[in-house]
Image (cartoon, rainbow, N blue to C red; front, side):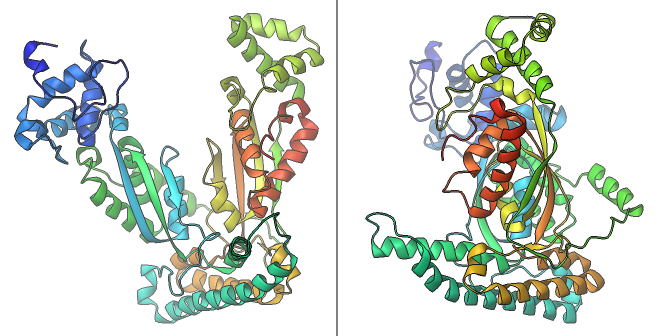
Length: 498
């Protein structure tokens, strides 16, 4: 540092001034991004660049502002206007982060938000642990001009909550009589556990219009991409949500969100595809009740080929082979030798470990017919699963939770689902935009998912434990049983928590 720069007090902005690793704080997010970006074009370190920038009054974070950082900086804005907006250097935007609270949006909109970009982090209100409030559901704006359809929509959601309360009233005494107590469990803790299980199963009759809340953290680049996706949504609620988010994020990272607009690519592609639709074969699943999900692999790599590919990656990583050398070596190996080598790369995994990155090179494709309740769990907490899915629908049957059936409550449960089917059909004729909101948590959704072997270890480890919710646990138990049979060594150490 120069003598002038040494006079700058950095203690308000860095966690230490003499070590090679330090935290940076008390600065606007866009200013932090500028400091990080400068390093790629300057031989100086972060602290040196920070000291230089702090001398510039335009940053408004120096002594002239009392050492407090303001939410906006003209210098940072000009930098981002040039390098991010002007030149498309989007990586700079990843250093600016915003945290959002998002309240009173529908379950349908929350799913769109959570699927918009995999780099965002979410924590959502859980219907498994909390009791929703009567009347807390989204009414699509398109219904305002259709009073008869709006009345039917509101009536459905009222009936859904009535049925929810009826299920709770029946499930609680049933569960109190049938759930085994844990050793040393107090009456209060047991009652809390019973209530949680009752919430978990009763929520299946609530619709996707039911409102939820969530916390969101994302970097500028991911948030910008998220807004583009939401602005391109077919649902007016999601488009409105995007503009609300844009307004609030811009208070923290204003420049990075300039010129956000819907994606012409997404809009034009959707329009062209819908102009030439293909009708699916007739299905007999509508109105059919299932006791749980159905999950299967639709693309399992050949086991021998999978072993060869993974062993080749292992030889490159562990022993420095070229790819040509590795391929030649594995062709000479017996299957048992390849299994032994790969088992050595997996067997030392512990409870929270992730497998070696070489296992990201092998992919599996799965088809799942799962309830919307199951789907909302599946789309969260994944570490890189890629999904293909359609709009919520009522054509694929529905799940009746086992406790609901065992408690003798299947009849009112199914009656509500049948009512949702009727109103969905009415909305398809009178107000198609509102139809997806009539789908219940019980209705099945068809999902095709692709995941690497690395990701499968995360999913199986997380979703097959005794603590996992029964619906999603059943889906992944089905997948694990098939996987273990077809790829025994590769699946052997996936379960590490149960």
